[in-house]
Amino acid sequence: MQLEFCQSDHVGDRAPQSLGWLLDERASAGRENLDAVHVSRYDAKEDGGALGEVRLLQGLGLGARSTVLDLGAGTGQFTLAVAPICSRVVAVDVSPVMQERLREKVEASSHRNVECVSAGFLTYEHSGEPVDFAYSRYALHHLPDFWKSQALARLGRFMRPGAVLRLWDVVYSFQPDEAEERIESWCATGGTGIETDWSRAELEEHVRDEHSTFTWLLEPMIERSGFRIEDTDYSRDGIFARYVARRL
Image (tube, rainbow, N blue to C red; front, side, top):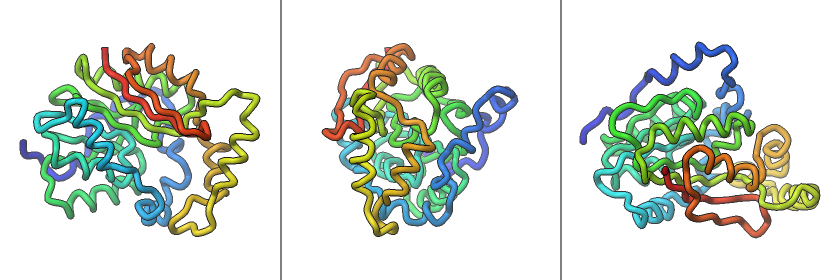
C-alpha cells in the first residue's frame, strides 16, 4: 500500500472544533510539548522502547496487512519502528512542534505508508480501513478524566472488533493516602542533566499541571468504552501502568 509521506490537513482538525464546550487539546498538550527546545532533545531524554513494543504487538497479530493508529505520536519513535511491519500507520499529535519534528523524520525515512495528522484524541477522525492496533504512550494523561473517557469511547469507534489497544502511561496504582510519599519519591529521582534526564522540576510539573489518574479510575473507563483489559503491568513504584486491551 503506497501513501503520501504526510498529510498536512485532515477533516478531524476542523469539524469537532465547532463544539463550543470541547476541551482545547492543544492548550492541554503540556508546556514542554509545545516548546521547540524540549522537542529537539526529546529523543535523547526518552527512549520509548519502540522495538520491544512492536515485538509485543507482533505477538498479538500485528502484520503486513495491519492498520495502526499512533495517538500522541510525539517525535515518532513508535511510528517509525512499526512502519516496516504494517500496511498503514497514522501518526496523530496535537502539538505543532511535535508534528513538525515527526514530519521531518518521516520524510527522511524510506517509509511511504505513514500519514501524519495534526489532531488529538478528541478531534481525530479516522478514514479508510478500521484500526487493527491502536498505540498510545504518555499521551492520555494530558486529558482530565471526563475527557479520557470521551477519548477512549471515540477511539473504540475507529477500531474493528477484536482490535488491540496498547496503552502505556503515568497511572497511579497506589492508594490516595500514599500519594505524598509515592509522588515525592518519584520527583526525587529527577536528574540534573536536562539534556538527557528528566529533572525534578519536570516531574513536579507533570504531577501539578497534568492529569494522571489512578488505575482504579482509568480501568473502568477503558472497560466502559468497549474494551476488555487482557493484561496489566504496574511499575513497582506505583507510578506507571501498561495495558493490553481488546475491542469488544
